[in-house]
Length: 221
Length: 199
Image (cartoon, rainbow over all chains, first blue to last red):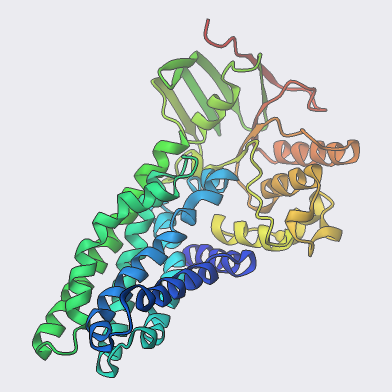
C-alpha cells in the first residue's frame, strides 16, 4: 500500500512541478464555457436550461485534454519497465496512475465546474447536485481515460485517438451525470442516478486497471 | 543460488532474435554477453527481466526467494535511464526506494559520488551523471540478479573504477551479474556468451 502511495505522491509532485496539467485543462474548460453564451446568444432562460449539459460536455473534453500523458512519460523514459519488476502487481501501478490523474486533473475540474456555471446562468438550486454528480463521475472519467492512454501510449500524436476511443465510453457517465444534476427531478430519481453513477465509477475502478495494464504489457515487450 | 537457461528462443515482430541460448550462472559469477548489433543482447536481458516472453525454452532461478518471480529479484539497467528531470537526484532515489520496497539512499548516492549533486534537479545532470544516477538504483535496493545493458556508456574513468568496485562487492556477497557490452567491463568475466543473432 505504501508503494502505491509513493507512486501517487510522485505523480502529483511531477504534475505540480512540470505544470501544464490542470492549468491548461482549467483554461480550456473556461474557454469552452465562455464561448457558449457568445455562440448561443444572451437568452437567459435558454442558457439556464442547457447549462448542466454544457458544463458536463466541457468537463469530458477538458479531462481528455491531458489524458494521453497518464502513462506516456513513464513509458518513454523506461520507468514503466522497472515498475513491472516491482513487488506489486502491475495492475496496481495502472490504478495508482489513474488515481493520480483523478486527483491532479479531474477532481479540481469537477470542483471548479459549478463556479464556472455562473457564466452560463446555472440555477443556484443546481449547484449542489451538479458538484456531487461531477465529483463522483470524475472518478469514472479518469479511469476510463487511463484505458485510452494505455492503448495509445506508443503512438506518436495519440492524443486525438484517445478522445475518439474514450468518448463513447463516457456516454453512460454523461447520461446519468445529467439526470443526477437536474434540480427539478424528484429527489428519489436524483438519488437513483447518483447511485448508478457510483456504480459506474466502481466498475471502471476495478476493470480499467486490468485493461490498461494488459495494453501496457503488450507495448513493453 | 543458480540461474539456469536451456534452449531459450525469443521472437520480436515475427522475427526470431534469439535462438537456442543456454547458460548456467552461479552465485558470485559474472556473465558477459557479446555479439554484433541486433544479435539479441537486449532482448535476452528483457526476456530474463520478464518484459518479454520466451517462444520456447526454460528459465529458472534456484535458491532464490520463495514466491517472488525472477523479475522481482532482478535489477534492469537499460538504455533509458528512468530518471525524472523535474525531481532532484535524491527525490528520484527516494521514489525508487519506496516503490521497490526499501533501501539506503545515502549509500546509493555515496557509491556513485552523487552526494554533492543530491539536491540538484535531475534534468540538469549531464549524460554521464544521469547514468550514474540510474546505476545508483543497483546499490539502493539489494537484489541478487543484475541485468546490465551497456552499463558503462558515458561513464568517466573515475566513475568506471567506482562501478567496478560496486560490481566486485555485489559478486563477493553472492550476487549474479549478466552484462551486455562491447567494451571491457574493467573486470574479468567468469563466463562469456557470444550471441550470433538470426542468420
